[in-house]
Amino acid sequence: MRGISIALSGTPGSGKTTYARFIARRYGLRYVSNGMLFREMARERGVSLLEFHRLAEEDESIDLEVDRRAMEAAREGCVVVEGHLAAWVLREVVDVVILIDAPIEVRARRVAERDGKSVEEALAEIREREESNAKRAKRYYGVDIKDYRIADLYVRSYPLGVRQVECVIASFLDSYREERPELFSGCGGGKA
Image (cartoon, rainbow, N blue to C red; front, side, top):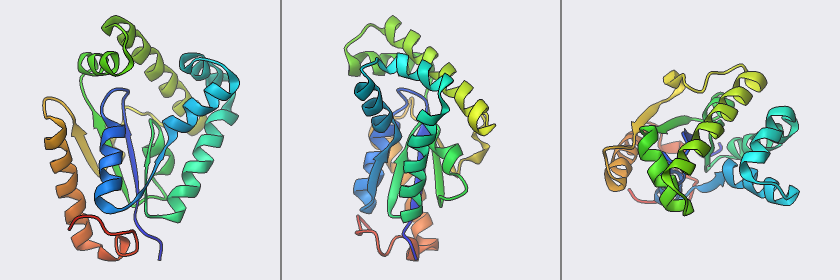
């Protein structure tokens, strides 16, 4: 039996990477980031992240390659796959879907601080990325990424702090592990 597979999605700046890495550490899972793969592909082509989002709107092979690799990792198990569309793309092959969100103003401040840009620049970039993600999700998969009903757990990462959100996620996954211990047994452990 393969180990647990978790898909974690969220809006830009919501904290999805922070929480996916937390889950990977706590439960001894591999961490796969669709965003890192997407960024690497943009660098390989010598274009900015926003330009690559625009290219992906016209060239479905970009998203399909990222999603193919994510699907492969999810099927192997003992993994948390993090990405904007991972929850919707992987819903049928993962055991758990977690969605993270926060108000756009909060996310813009976080992105500005993280990336060393103004809040206004971050806000404009977030809006453009979200629009691009939504278009591609609808066109390629027929899904609405504003429909959070697919989530097993939805967390609004503000006003809670990082530690509090980690506690919410851990409580959910610890309870899940109590019900399905076999999914966690071959994955390297993590905290009890």
